[in-house]
Amino acid sequence: AQSVSQHNHHVILSEAASLELGCNYSYGGTVNLFWYVQYPGQHLQLLLKYFSGDPLVKGIKGFEAEFIKSKFSFNLRKPSVQWSDTAEYFCAVRPGAYNTDKLIFGTGTRLQVFP
Amino acid sequence: GAVVSQHPSRVICKSGTSVKIECRSLDFQATTMFWYRQFPKQSLMLMATSNEGSKATYEQGVEKDKFLINHASLTLSTLTVTSAHPEDSSFYICSARILGQGGDWTFGSGTRLTVV
Image (cartoon, rainbow over all chains, first blue to last red; front, side, top):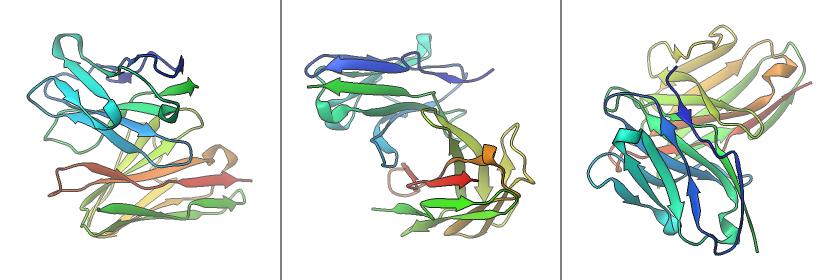
């Protein structure tokens, strides 16, 4: 079945550690890709998105993601995490881009950063 | 910037009753809105696509008679959970794409529904 997979369900890091969260999707054709963050008690916020062009995308708060088409992946990275990065992170795919505006979300990764 | 306002933020209802959740687009018109359901510590599951002036499109496995969606205007979509049961308790989130402003999607703050 078509899906979006996030293999890391719960990640625990110390401040200043590097972060990489995996995201794989199984949709063919043109897709748009997103990473969202959900802080406790808050609504979803966009970290970054990929529509086309440079596969290395830079987002807010020092996050970046790389689209590797051959691997159907869009992994999120940050070189040095902070305690304030503690949140839930969701990868999302817009399948069949330009034919639909619906977003399909991955299962989410809970990130805990300790001082 | 353009936002989606969702109301109520929390609701507790008795089994068998119906609950209506509203989603309003502020400062922009939304011909399409999306309704998601989020279980604790899980992802957002797309329930349906709400289309202004026409019937909603439901995802596979979602009971359209259970979750009634109405999108009567370009700024308002409603989700009514009919004959609610405890298993309907969840976090419901609406979303819309902001056309003309970079095309980003905006999300409501969610509604925590508890059926007792």
